[in-house]
Length: 349
Image 1 (cartoon, rainbow, N blue to C red):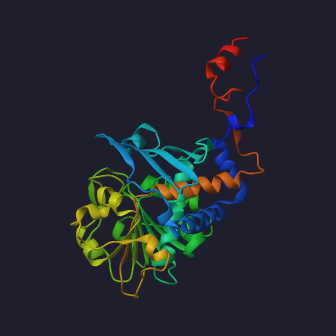
Image 2: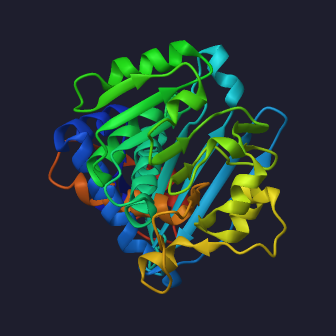
Image 3: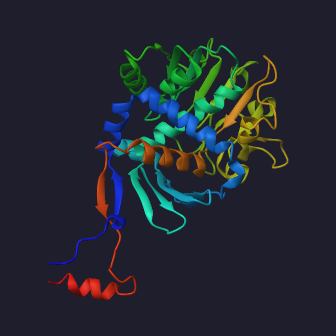
């Protein structure tokens, strides 16, 4: 009988089924609030983290990326792809998984799906930023792009920012109908719109989340009036933007990590001497966010590894004492750390 591995060899694994069960168990809006708080807490200690633009492998049809970071005690990374063409083949545009490890030993502490978790953390980050940047008392949001992210965005802004009305638009009416159907009974007034222009009527917050890998103009300059907050989350690779350049020139722009956003965000349309503000500086009180009622604020979000780290850290804590994970026998654990071959030989019996 080969020796049994010790507890150190086992790594908690959260499958898609486990993640869905965990979120239902806690409640999706509570999870979104918890994630927003975890992300904001880590943004407050931004300077303690390793930071690097994500490592990207681009192709004509999509991108595959690794997003690593560490706070010196724990290390986390996410594998994620973005393939807009996948939808027509019945596949997800974005899939992901992530890992959290102990810096002291290098041993993994959590392996989890992150397709669902990325949607949750992206929505939580959007609403967390809007908590600092959006007009006070904002109640209506335009949701332009009604794909896989849209419902999470709407629920996050409801749970974290208090919006009560969402105005939906997508170039594909079936996507808008899907989003409206999924949001039924969620405590939001849902308005299906036929044009992007119609969707922004009366909206204090405008979220753009489209998938096409191209320089598109989802919002033209004349569509955006004073005093709104724009949550631009569709841009996530070189050559993909959603906003007319003139909107950027009229806005105060807030970003996660400038070296990455200059490559992938809306600001790739601007000269690199243009002033942008790192969001963590607003959260820590080092600089102002929204200054007056007429200001246009723009959160040019491309997603950053610290947000994934926060999500992994949250899930690692949330699964404790639950059945929403299994233990994977993932690490070789010989009695003598120098005798890996001996362990292999003994397994033969």
